[in-house]
Image (cartoon, rainbow, N blue to C red):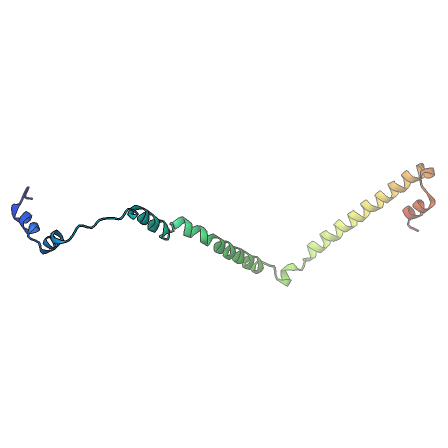
Length: 133
């Protein structure tokens, strides 16, 4: 690398463009030049950042995710053959139903025994309703 080359300096000084610029009248800026430049910069459309573009797409992504979720839920529905209980499940349900009926019967008997101890606190209509006539 050459530290200082006088030949290159002469080439720049002899350039036709520089000679033409040297002959031109100097341009003078108006008093409102700075205001005009600032206004034109403010009027330029702002460049959107990557994050702004991403957040504009989030509603679309949310709707798509909900649609996919609903589709998967519909595909996961059991078929008719899967919904029919097996023999063991039916027997277990019958046992639970029988146990529940025994509990209901015991509760009705206890309620009637409590009513017998306090007959004067119940009207005839309430006693008939409790007995179930």
